[in-house]
Every structure is written in structure tokens, then in C-alpha cells.
Length: 389
Image (cartoon, rainbow, N blue to C red; front, side, top):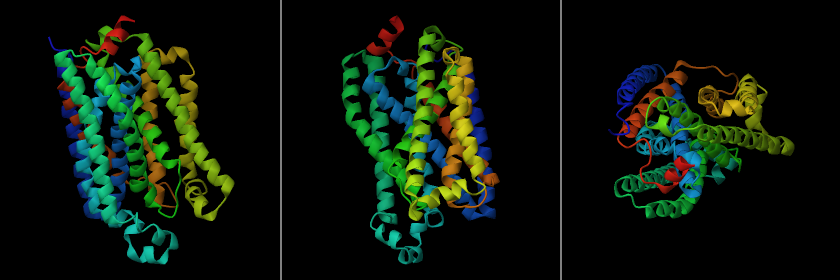
């Protein structure tokens, strides 16, 4: 019997539901676009960033797993492989952002560029042709890395060749460098340039950490579903769960460190060209969202994950992971929407429809790819060693 046979009916139903939810979200988005094109593009970008963040987070964890060969990655390897392979989907779903570039990005307005010394100085970098070329390069890098690593793992499933593990490890070294550079510049282009007169050198790493945190939360939730039946139920143990709990806690702390460091540097510098970014988010109605992030995204999960018992019990850990995933959505809302709405954190109906629409399609294709391969890597010496331990 194949590894997936016991879970196939459940996953078929999940895939079908995901597509239905995605279709409903798409219909809502299209209806909203007829009412307000500007709001459609703004909400679409917000929803897109959440799911592309999860995609690149899956890729980052996949690269890291092959690079360091940690036992924590064996159970979620197929999860992050399937998520990373959705990079092709995200490349296709970037098309509406290309269509709405003039609505989304101030540097597309030639009159604003000519009237602003800062934008004029950045025109060599922030222009539509170079922007699209960089975006294409980002997706090529991510797709090549994701599919090469997945192909090598699939080859090892069929050939039982242990040398492929070393090949994936060697490949992951330069792949990690390309990953960090590409994701950093993608965050500069797609998000930071929404407010092009402001910049932060921490911003790229903050987005990487956020994407990885989103992925660990999602992976724990998926593992909760997979652990109910074989083959995952036959190999998962307290040690695996504890490792993932520690990593969720570590990246929660790292996210808070990055966010606070950026705020502290800008606050201590107190320069008008820098502090307007936080004035929009702290000294207006957006301060409520900032407080929610401070408490819900850091203090609550941090305090909950201090419990060793909770980190070693999958049910409790999954509840914390669900909360972290929801707060990741709030974090992206706080980062993106104030660029368009400076005064109050009003939630438009399309702000809900966009992540639901994109998420439904993303999850449906994710499950479809997950079903095509064994849920556990076969003949991988690292997995065999972990199982024996």
C-alpha cells in the first residue's frame, strides 16, 4: 500500500473544499473590482504577499533542511517541498499586480518622480522595466531551486542512492545565498517601494524571518492532520514535535527582534525622512493594530511556548501555530495597508476576499502536489537515522 492511501479520501475532500473556497473568493474579488479597481489592486497585493511569503518560507526551510540535515526537517520535508513548488502558481498570480502597478506604486507616477528629489534619484532602480526583469529573475531562481531539490529527493525515492543526499547538501549552500538575496530584493520591490521615500536595511531579513515563521506555523498545522494516520503516525514522536515547537518559538523571538530593532534605530535617529513610516502606523488609528501585534504576535505565543509540555504535545502546539498564522496575516496588513490608508485601519471586504481567494487556490494545488509523492522521504539516510534514534 502506498504511503498516502490511508489519507487519500480526507485529502481529496480538503482539496475540493479549498478550490470551492478559492472560487468563492475569486468571485467576490471580481465583483469588488467592478465597484473599485483601486481597492481591488490594493487588497490583492495584501492577500498575495501572505501566500507568496508562505511559498518562499517553504523554500527557505527546504534549503535549510538539506543544508544542516536536521532531524526536525524529515517529517515536514514533503510539506515544504509541495509549498515551494507553488512558486509557479505565485508567478502566474503576480500578473494582476503587473496590471495594477500604476495604481499601487507611487514611483510609476512620472509627475511624482519629477517633483521628488528622492524618487528622481531612485528612478534608475525603480522603473517598470527593471522591476519586471527583477521579478522574473526572482521567480526563476525560486522555481529552479524548488524543483531541483524536489527532483533529487524523488530520484532518491526510486534509486535509493545515498549520494544524492550529499548533492542536495552541496547545492543548498549557494542556493541559500541566492534565496536570501532574491527574497530581500523582492521585499524591497513589492512592499517597501509602496512608500519609496523610506527605506530600511533590516526590511529584507524581516520579511525572510516572517515567511519562515508563517511556514513553521503552517507545517505544524499540516502535521497535525497528517499525524492522525500512517505513515506519519508510525514515526512521529515527542522529540520531533519538541524540535518544531522550539523552532516556532525561536522564529517568533527573531521576528520580534527584527521588528523592534528596525523601530529602535529609526526612533533613535528621529529623522523626518525615516520616522514618517512609523508615525503612520503608531500615532494614528493603526496603533491598535500595532498593539495587537505586540501582544498577540509576540508576548502571547512566547509565553505559551515557554511551556516544555506544550511544545511536546502536538494538539496544543497546533493551537499556538494557528494563532501565529492568523497574526502573520495581521502583520502583513500592518505593513502594507497603511501605505494606502494613512489614518485608520479600516478593513474592506476585499481585504478578506483576496487572501481567501488566493489561499484557496494555493492550498488546493499544495494538496494536489502533496498527494503525488510519498509523505515521507524514502531511502534518505538522514530519515533512517532519525527514525532509529
